[in-house]
Amino acid sequence: MTLCKMLEDHEEKFFKYFRMTRFQFNVLFLKIENNITKQNTHFREAIPPKEKLAVCLRYMAFDILIIY
Image (cartoon, rainbow, N blue to C red; front, side, top):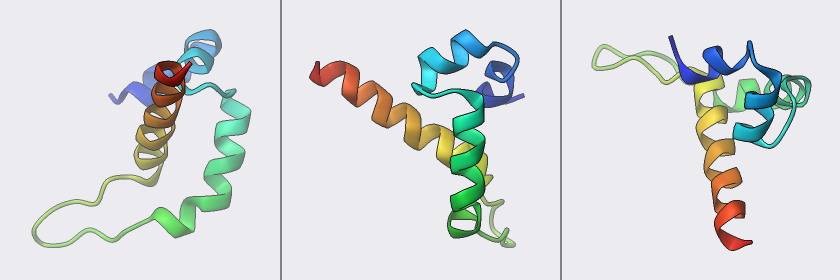
């Protein structure tokens, strides 16, 4: 189970972690899903697009915390 899936059950924790609501996350995900989706290869499985978005948002949210 991924962290993103675990946080989906806890709205407050989700918001603190990603700095957006689950609804906002899902709207953004639907807008960019096709752009960040890759195919699996014989060598490795592609990172799921939701995981990519979660890592990116967490990085950006953490960077904002450090700056301020």
